[in-house]
Image 1 (cartoon, rainbow, N blue to C red):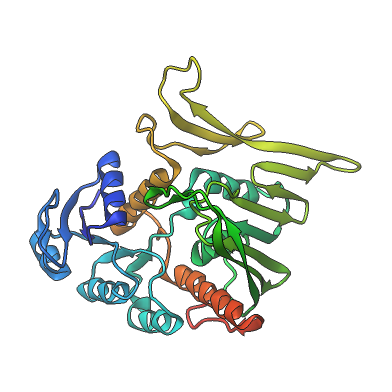
Image 2 (tube, one colour):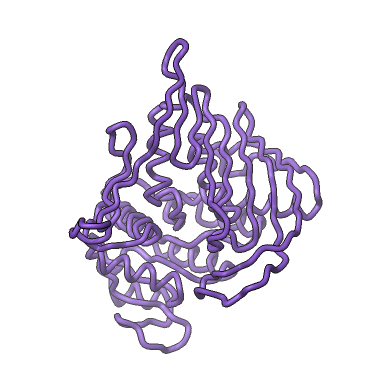
Length: 348
């Protein structure tokens, strides 16, 4: 593996650090704005870190406003970089970033959701053709750009003109958990739900449903439905055509060790469907949750890409479209109507 440096030392940087330790990746420096204790040498700038370490990859977890500048700095220095989502804070920033670094191919984005074991298994299942050609994806689990990533992955990455219709409604819901943990709340509070329908063209569409803090509110189910020409995937349940006068149902099964008298330790081992393994844990024995498994998988793939040993883990243009459509959902919801987003300048 090539060595890499972290830019930033906050919540997400710590997640990258733990993933790197688990997979044996070498982090040789951390770039921070102010002196602080870090487990490897700290540097005041990315250029200083590159000069001192010879790293060929940077992983940046900085604010939305700071992300485009650090991406440009890495590309100008000729090294690969993985930045967090979204890669710029607004639509204008997305286009400006593309104009500066798009042609370099050096900027990737840390969109980990398609690498979650559950999502990776679902993507493998729909790609197999079990439910035919996917035509609609309904997502109610995570915010705009992450949800768009999952939608577009199942639909073959549409990136043309898109019609977006959105609205919002406010209703009370208890919020028992946040990123910081249990909130102590015992009474419902007002939360905004955004509903949107996206028409990608060619018969492909997406339905977006997100309530404030839905990602962490365990009083709400996280849902994903993929409708295809020959069937449908709803969470982990599959219904499909089995031939004349035959409808088949089946499930994606998660093999989880550590229950009851299974003494091998708590771990996710595989996700499978009808005897076919769709996803297998690359790091059994580390007892990682799904988000850490996804982060580690993305880091592994980014390190292989930086060493010219693998494909791009999540190309910038893909994430730019996710974010652009996410911003369009917000704009349409605020207007309470429909808008058409033209094909972006980076569309293939």
